[in-house]
Length: 201
Image: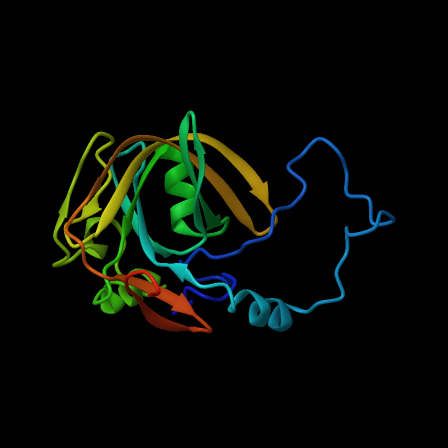
């Protein structure tokens, strides 16, 4: 599988944190900061020090076929309007379907959600509804599956899709959101799962 804490290289987990030229102007390699001497491994090692939560991103394409993947390159963008973003590998099934369906949901996993995270990060899992198997889901406004075990969720329509190098930066307009209980969250840090609990005393 592609682990949530490393840059996507063909699997389904989305996790790249870099943004690229979003179109219009060509790259200018002579300008400072436009090239890097870091290799992929060094970059992954640095970014692994940035702890994140873990979500499952779902979508339903224009034909009504769903897709799900583990995603931790997720953040809120704006309060007015309410927006979030998620980074999706541009060669993944998710990229094709979210571009077609123009909607997605993010289910934030509880601390005991490691098996669910691994399942939706597995490039060999079933596709369509078969990928959800015994995973209980519900829906909100857009019809995208929301995991019943999620401790929090957002349901979105696609507001914009930007170029992010080997990823797409998908910006969602939040149309519904909710929380379920007060469980600890599943996190990812230094290439491994961690429990995110309450505030530091």
